[in-house]
Image (cartoon, rainbow, N blue to C red):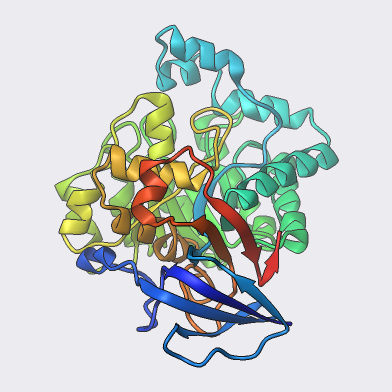
Length: 405
């Protein structure tokens, strides 16, 4: 069915040049077209233009009444398959315990692994779908979902199977990541667990798109990371990295060495990491929701962009350090706490977020032939107002693959 969106006040995210990501000063351009129209045909964008053009015919006409039409958000880092919240640790944080201290006491990731082990697959699937639907209604159209709360061969594969079911049934674009190296599983020595993760790779590669490692002090070393990423690459899994969340871990450098699509977190990253990322295909992905919830420093996104690099922002939606998948709030934090302009934050949560999960060729911007993953706002909204009034309802309708939710 052809659907015509007319009387668009602002069409944002127009990508006439066919870019797959925006680097440096390119992130200042939000691709704005005023007084516009857009035609979708089935699942894809067919054409767009301005009010000066003759409007094409369509089966259905949506009068946008001056609202903004923009690409749906692309959230490239989530952990939404989990067995329950960690409200007790929330109280520990209020009482002054750090993320590292909670993990050292057996909480954090290991707590989530214990709970997941006891939870039936149907419950994991139903709860994850409920979270994703909530994200869809908040405007997210593409999402990467990680394993990492299994921490043994059976439960890690079970998580990937849940994600595979979500892929098959969600209207979202869904990518999956094998994060067996999220923490050392209970009952393993460190060395034995690294070996076990490598052994899991054969089966994981049939289900996952990427392999990831939490390269961090107290978790996995640069040497562990290199071994796991090399094994993943041999099985056809492109690397992604959790790096520099708690310390300068060397994760960025090893990620670039092994051709990681993205290096994520980067709360503790600066000139050395910028230098490592120069002239690479790896994108820096920062997670301000985690900084907000844990009270950690925010990534130096402005410095990375000013150095000519691309930056993506993602939610890190998980039960312990970022229990929200609201990408509009992520965008607002990018502006308020990281001092990004609305245009830079917008590109970070759309086209660059799509690039960070390898789907910017099919979604994340406005171009003919891409998926019609769209957010239509109420009349009178623009990018600045979205982040300034970051709690005021603004969405009129979300469309995924051309269909309204």
